[in-house]
Structure formats: structure tokens, C-alpha cells
Image (cartoon, rainbow, N blue to C red; front, side, top):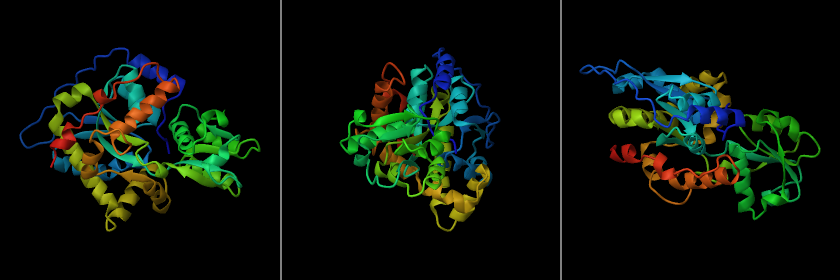
Length: 340
């Protein structure tokens, strides 16, 4: 599972270069015959995260065609999708709210029109036997891939426990190598996402989760982010896409249809449905009604505004970018608000 990240230096450089031209390319006009689906598809990049693999249900059920909108979903490794969006090769992208701010800092203004989900347990801090709380990490070494989303989770957990960041020794390690790093005697804990987290738990006997994104709902939102020029020209199509998403979430959450949804989603990523079920449990999907709440402007994490203000501070303080992003300028609540 490729999890959301604030980007490696190489990917960030690619985005910055792609974003040097701050004027988005104007997509060709969609040709729409009376009563037919658009002939030119809207292109959306998506990748391996449950809140985005969920789109596969709508794709295979043919719900976009039923809604009269022609959409082409393109499967990417997450970082590659951000680079493609920054280079104006996609009309929209599935991206974490914090990562959209990184893209915006490079000059490509993607507009968040909807939240697909927030992480509700799939991002975790795992500690060895004898460490029972975040406060117990004082004076210990904690491994994390610096600058990525679980570095943000770790800093938040430390603040909640009134532990200074300077009281913990950070060990920088590539996420996929964290299970091996965790097994070394010098590292007391790691901050990591699923499914790497399960690998780490199996690698170190007696280890356990002491904090997760479930403890901080709204810290990490995932979004549908659209090219600004495309959005201005095709608002009605985007409304239909949001309505299809609402139908998809209800289908996944309905006990009667959940098994079918799990079958579709798990097949897309090569897992058994029962294995994939735990990742759905750790991802709080947001339907239209939930989005109407999330897109209300507020300072707290219950709002995508407040969450994005929070991550904007993290990105700035940790040198992900050198100037804060205008958060309000990349959030567009209008479509959500206009839908019944």
C-alpha cells in the first residue's frame, strides 16, 4: 500500500520543476451530445490507499456512465501521480490535504473539492515491550521517515503527551525498511502506516500500537483535488462525480453490499477480501453528508480547513516548503454546498 507522503526531495524537485509554469493548461472542451456521455474523458489519478481504491467500486459498477459523465481513472504510484498532476497531465488527483499544499507550493494550484476519507487507525506509532504510552518515549530513539505524514503524526502525539520533540531522538529511515530498523536494539518505537505496520508488529515480539490516527480524527484527510482551470469549466461534471462518490461510500458501508465492495477493492490491490477489511476499518470514508460537515470552515481537525492549517504549519516548520501556502485558496466548498 502506497501511503500519502509529504514527498522525498527528488519527487518534490520534480513537482517544483513541473509547477514552474503557474498557468494551468486549459483542457480541450468536453464535447457532449444531447443525452450522451462526454466523449473526452475527465482524467483522475488514484493510487493504493483504501479511500481511493474505493473508486474501483464505482468504476466496475458502471456508475459514472449511469450518471452521464465520462471519467478515466489512471492508476499510479502515489508520488508519480502528484508529478503527473503538477505537469498538467491529469485533470484531478487523489491526494492527502497536506500533500496538496506541497503541490501548491510548487506553483500548481489544485483545488480540493471533496474529502474521500480521513485516516482512522492506519497510521500508527508502534513501541516495544515495556513502553506503554507516548510519554514513555522520553529519552528514547524513534524511527520514522522524516518529512512524511507519520512524522507529522509523531509530532502530534508528542505534543498531546506534553513531550518535547527534543526529548526524543529521531532516527530517519525509509518507510519500507522500518520493520528491520525496529528490530534493532537501539530503536524503541517507530511511526509508520499500514501494511508496513503489521510487518513491524510481526517482526518484534511483544510490540504494540501506542498511538494511531484513530486518536486524532481529521489529522490526515484525503481529497479529490482538481485542476483549477478544469474545475471552472466543468463544475456540473464534478458535481456528478461527487454524487457517484456518495453512492460508492454508501455501498461500501452497507452490510448487505460490503462483501461485494471488498471483493472489488481487494482484487485491485492483490489481497484477499478478509485481509483488506482491516484497512477499510482504519479508513473513515466520507459521504456527501459528512463532506458538508467537513467543509464548514473551522479551526479544529473536524474541518478540512483546520486540518490543513495544522499541516501547513508542520510543513513550514519542518522545511518542506519555505513559505506558507494560502490554505483557503485551495479549498472549494461550493460544489458540496450546492448538492442536495
